[in-house]
Amino acid sequence: MSRNANRIILLGGPGAGKGTVAMTLVDRFALQHLSTGDMLRAAVAAGTELGKTANGFMSHGALVPDDVMVGLIQERVQQADCRLADGTPRFLLDGFPRTMPQADALDRHGLGPDVVVYLVVKDEILVRRLTGRRSCPKCGNPHHVEFAPPLHEGLCDRCGTALVHRVDDQEAAIRKRIDLFHSQTDPLVQRYAPLLVTIDGEQSQERVARSVIEGLRALEATGS
Ligand SMILES: [Zn+2]
Image (tube, rainbow, N blue to C red; front, side, top):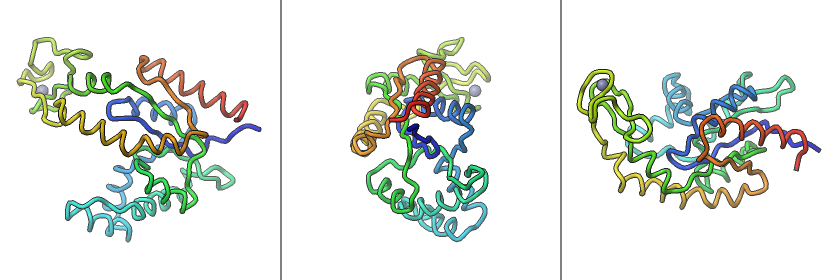
C-alpha cells in the first residue's frame, strides 16, 4: 500500500535551507505552501475574527496561542486551493508545529501530517552559514563572507554602502536559536519518526531538491 503525501510538515533548523525544500515541493508536487507568518499577516489584513484575536496578542508583543494559530491554519485549508477534487486537504506547512503542544493542537484539529520532511544539517554548518551573513543597511542586498562574498571587501555590491554584521547574525545569537530549535523540535522528530523523510541538507541545493523528489516518490510508490 502506498502512502499519501497530502499533508506535509517541514522541519529543519535555522539556516538549514527549508526555502529550497518548500519551493521544490510546491513546484513538483503541487502542494500549497502555508507559512504561518503569511497566514497571520493575511488574517490580520482581512480583519477576520481570528485575525483580530491574533492581532490582539501580537500588538502587545505576545505570542499567538497555539489554538489560535491552528484555527488560522484550519480556516486556510478550507479553501479550494488546499483541497484535492474529492475534498482531501493537501498542503505543505512551514513553521508550524515547532513544539509538542503545537503538534498536539494540530492533531486535535485533525490536521496531523502524512509525511514530515526533516532537513538535517550539523550545528557547526548552520553556524557557518548564518554567522557569515553580511547585510547592506541601505538597500538590504544580502552577502555572505564565504558563499557570496562582496566584490569589494566589506562593501555592498549594489550600492557601495559598508556592510554590517547584524546582532541577530552573530554567533551568540545564532547558537541560542539553534539550541532553542533542538530543545523544541528534537522531541517532534521522535514523535514523527514513522512519518519522516530525512534529507541531508548539507548537499548542494540541486541535490537537496533531487533528494526531496526521490524521497517522496519512493514513499508514494512503495509505501511504508
Ligand atoms: Zn546596498
